[in-house]
Length: 371
Ligand SMILES: *Cc1c(COP(=O)(O)O)cnc(C)c1O
Image 1 (cartoon, rainbow, N blue to C red):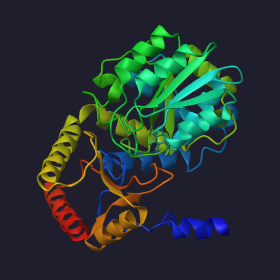
Image 2: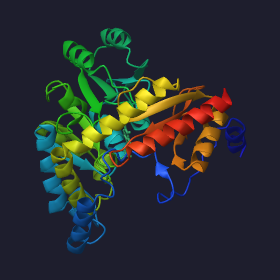
Image 3: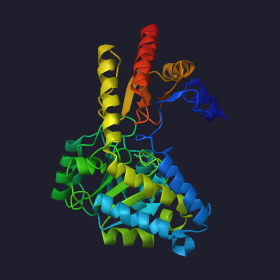
Image 4: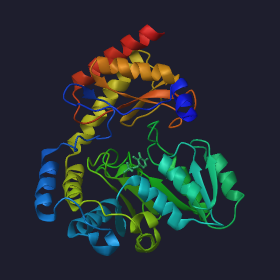
């Protein structure tokens, strides 16, 4: 009870909002390519429900692994140019399960301080010596690697989920190879958005499976569906199937979701106009915000945070935006560091240029009022 009171008095109390997309423009979803409501994806889902029903009925290793799951895994392996891919029911579970399967007592796990909570929880619960380095600080990481012996796993977000900036991946690849450490990249926000065919940060930087042996992606963001995957070598995937507890001891995601994801994967690869449109909306927003002196954080991704600082203030601005017809979420500690509360504005290929212009006008008005 005291805990709840404390959260309220600090402006950190969270409540859920029932979303009615009909009346507001949504600037806080991770549906970057507008595929969650795409007609082809929805039809693939409906048709698959007729065949498979709603639930998978079981875990993958019992009798929940359908042809739909299997085909999607093969297609994801090809898409990411890895030997194999393995579906998990959520990204949170993929991260916790993978880190726990690969690192334990006597090993080392190194993570960027701004990594997604699921990666941090995986490192913490693994039993390995767990070290966090300040955001993108490869010099610090190098010191930590030099001062440790034994098996080492370095884990990073590709595109950082609350800041929108990207990891110094070329340096991380270099550093991990020099130190015989394994590198795991969570590209939840890169897949679909970055790279020529939507292959994410790895495709954009032309990195291969030797550079990044453990690659994680989620399906609930640009794919517009639900679930997640790990892509990597035959040995990696077999190790996860045999030992990742969050893979073994949970119900497989619905096969119709897998079928819908197969449809969205095709669109991601083929419909490059979605990435181009998204980029043009981001450019429009960044250019406009710079002219209006809005305090944007440095990011080229569809995640464009506007730094507010104070948690109450961020919540108030989010409420005022809602009154003006825009859904923008306020992100507060502990999701982000203290005094770094922000509006996390995200863009989607389904937005119109006029939506962005109106959002800029409203942000300008609210920002001027407050300062
Ligand atoms: C969303 C997200 C996850 C978790 O994925 P879910 O499928 O939502 O559980 C993991 N890592 C990052 C970076 C994310 O943004």
